Image 1 (cartoon, chains in turn blue, cyan):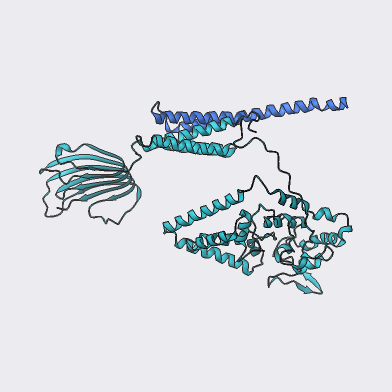
Image 2 (cartoon, rainbow over the protein chains, first blue to last red):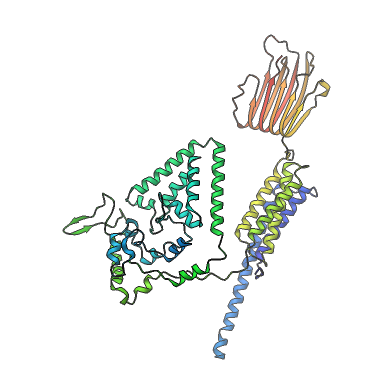
Length: 80
Length: 478
């Protein structure tokens, strides 16, 4: 019961959060230097892009559903 | 479970204390009218509402097994626990900090009885003041007073908070105990036995002494039970009363009065994984913090832990794009974690994870370093053994991030002092030790001369800096 339809918004925001976490973890581990405010642009960009992706995804789904119902509706009438 | 069944079968408003239980629908109207309680009677609600007013998942005060106001009985029914547990714990909480009294009073005020629609506050504000509401207000007031008087006693308050959390946790656990596996027999009984239809109550009397209906020429003036609001709440019930008095032969009434069946459980979608993601993130955060705790600064250690937690959150949310569900709560927690991460990265690096106590005690002028530094803790700069010859000047700088900086100077030197404290207090020789005056951005520049009669030997030029804490300069006893 875990598998479901793809939600690109979640993927985008999750990847940006992982990027922010890795950036700070590398700083704490001494591999590179991260400024303290680096989380702000990363998280904000992630949320914005996730919103855009979710919006596009929703629009595509809606259009596909509308197309399917408009092509599927006459079907039963013809057959029945 | 018997209480739940009672609640689920929905005893009507007139059934609780009243004699309407045995009556058929034909004579139910006068019976309920005689037993009408003020709140349910005059609310003008549709009958279907009152019949379904007490589904088992809503917290209502229980009139049947009450001792004082039924709050504990209602809590016990809500959580499927013995009400005595709540009574004893609330009594203990009332004695220790008054939280029990506050909770009991406000629950009394804001939670209605299971067979009523209105709570005491609403009755109070609509002009129907009675002893119940006044007692509830008194409870809450006394509780607030006890709470305020105990505010300075931290241990009592800690005990009260821990006890309330334990009680809430026990109640929640008990409530969720049998959640995925409801008793099939009880469900069958509920489904098979629709409750006997009860007539809606008809208002007959109003308890407020200044709201007695005025009778002029045999007609009532006012008398809805409210000081304001719709004036026709009595006439609206007439159609319902007609329906009921017509009895079962009337085609509409069974549908109107039968309580709606509980909706069938929705088909479960993909499972929620937000809780597991949160637990994993907590675990990863603790691991990351612990890994860097011993050998790193506090900021770095926290940053490592929070970064691990954020990575887990991000992975969980990304995975939930096709497997399992996470909601806005997980995203919110991740954003909070990112904010804390930025804050921890902004912490100064000289803060360590340990509270240090350092003492610098130079015994020769050549040993005095130009710069003493401590991240957090208590740093003591003891200059009493410094052999200063006449006219000699020694300059040094001491800094503590968080904590206390103590400087002890010999009694026979002149001290040129420049102290900066970010947030905290400055203590100079001659100040009252108990006079601690915490202020942000303190700066003092003074020259301390030795006491009269003591010959000045040399000069100390001290520059002290404490970010958060106290800077204390004292003279050694000569």
